[in-house]
Length: 215
Image 1 (cartoon, rainbow, N blue to C red):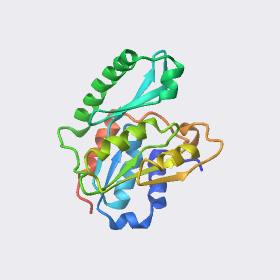
Image 2 (spheres, helix red, strand yellow):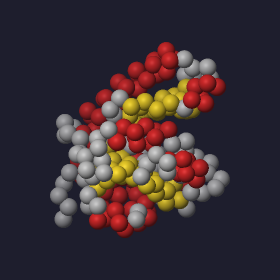
Image 3 (tube, rainbow, N blue to C red):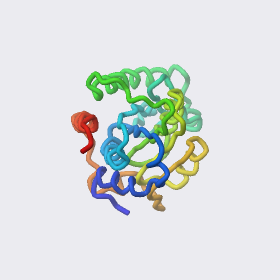
Image 4 (spheres, helix red, strand yellow):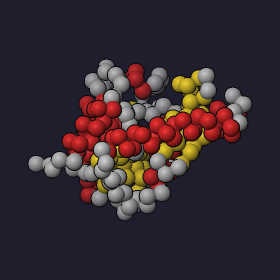
C-alpha cells in the first residue's frame, strides 16, 4: 500500500481504526510535523478534538539521522541504550544534544498553538498519530509523556510501520493500530508518493482549521 500523501494516509488510517473508538471520548494528538496532516484527517473522521504532541528525536553527534533517543513534552526522555553503548555516548554528550532539542521543542509548542492551551487529555482516550514508525523512538517518548496527563487509555495509530516496531509498542500502549506493515519495510518515506516535508505553516493551518466548528 503506497499512499498519495499524508492526508490520504490519514483517511485510510481513520477507516482502519476499531469502531469502538467512535464510542469513546477521544482526543487525537499528532506528532509534528509529519504526523499532523495524518492526525487532522483522523480527528475529522472521529469528530474529535485535535492537538499536537511535540516529540524531538535525539540524533547521534555526527550521525544526526540515527536516533539515540527522543524527548517529549513533560520532560520525558527515552534513550536507546544499544545505540548509546555502541557509540560510547556519555551523559554529557546526551545532555548537549537534549538541551538543543529541548529549546526547539519549547519553540514549536509555543508557535504551533498560537497561544491556545493544550487540549485536555485527562480521562479521555489519547490517540497518538504519526505518519509512520521505523524504530519507534519518538513514539515511545510520546507514550510515556502523555501518560503523565492521566488519559483513560493510550492508543498508537499510524498508517504504515515496521511490523517488529508495532509489536514492541504493543507492550507500552494500551492499543496499537498499524494500518499497513509491509515487509521488507525500507523506511516510512518509501510508502508515500509525496513525502515532502510538512512545514510549520501547514501545521499551524491545520491546527487552526481543527478549532472551527464541525458542520
